[in-house]
Image 1 (cartoon, one colour):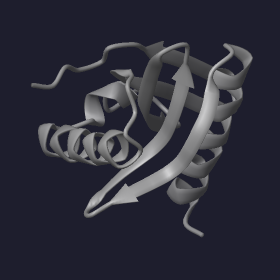
Image 2 (spheres, rainbow, N blue to C red):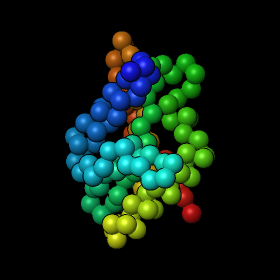
Image 3 (cartoon, rainbow, N blue to C red):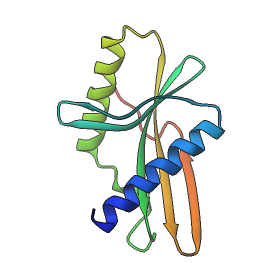
Image 4 (cartoon, rainbow, N blue to C red):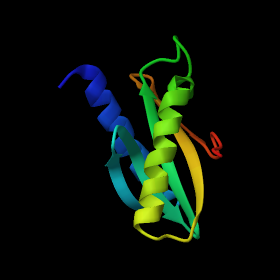
Length: 119
């Protein structure tokens, strides 16, 4: 596995651990619908959280959250909409980004709630 893939996988594991510590219930990992993949679908109270995890080894080229592009957001919204409709869920939906910088100096996790809105 390429080094960047390993870093991404480790980032997702750290994000799941982080969310569980914050008392989120993890419902799905790497949920796929058509061309979209939602890294984590979790629930807390009556809110469904779709979390996109971005992991980098350095912020040198930009913050991890800056790498979530409009086309990806559009695909995430479509996938989560499908998930909610298929499950006939009556929940509020929130889109979060979990930005992680992990390197030899340590690990920094930033949880950005309501990272983007959809219409």
